[in-house]
Image (cartoon, rainbow, N blue to C red; front, top):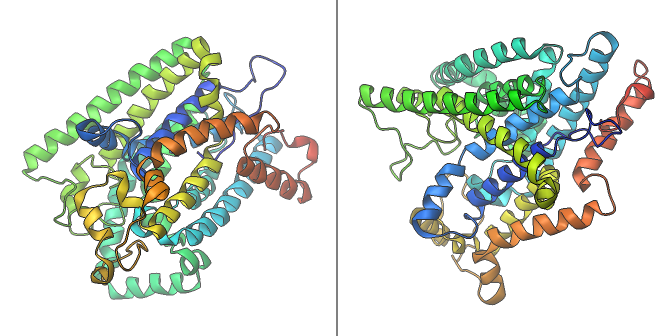
Length: 441
């Protein structure tokens, strides 16, 4: 989502892979469906589509970020020597910038409360954690990804249980948080992003590494795409079927609902080890991560083929996909505005959330509650209409904005700002010569 793919070059082997932008656009559509309501459809179709998007859009963004990291660091050939050092420097600088941008955006949109956890800062941490793996080939990255996906969620659960039950560890974390600027500003400190919230690195780093492994393959080769698509279907089916079977055998029923079982901050809740068997969205379990990865592999393979066969017709959507960072930030600001004017529940949310939005003063005591109007009021007239159809409006805006913007500029606003900042910082570093920096850095 936040990484920028190489711009078009003079040779066909290095030109931009439009299919990646098309896949990113699908992730944007899913993001809008989760936060604004599913575009176009309603009723049962909207309910089913919402749960199809939930969690998987995030997984797709994350895998594509990993693919982009591979393309930024040698494509199919892992960098070595000076090239490896330069690639790691660029990725590290990009990661720090994304953390700063993510914390700032989280602070600016804190009115959204539990409705939105800004993922940009998490991506910055993912990038920093990926640095030791940048020089690996596809096979090594695939093994590392599998290891993290299998062990990460379980280790996270054990660590969070220890932190919750051991007073000394709790005090240690509190001390770290007391000096962590990210935590003090927007509750996005190192500990928060490693183990808590909706996108903990302990779970999602595996998807980044998997994306890097995919990016090390020749994605222009149709045989590779076929293997990627079929492999993704197999991985998804095995993961979801295994989760369903284990949940049935264990006699548990981990699911979303008003009974409070769903962790309000994501991740498998402390004291609910049965959730580790589930593939429920935004729990960060191994089955959710692996199942989501399989879906991402299949979607990516299809998008790469579609871009080759219908690239001209799909170009407007691909352009929107290339501006994922900009559109994410804009949608976060719009969501905060919806909450502030009391119009967010008009988009057709669940009755439980609509009731919370209308509580007004009676809502005191609910943790991390969005800043809905204190009197529970809702807008009328045009503002009400805009909130009802925000998903469709923002989707159309995204495509039109991208098309018009790209007529004059090479990258989206935030994409360009981050890339040029990376270039500027790297040119200041004495061990990197400007000529070693690619155009897309």
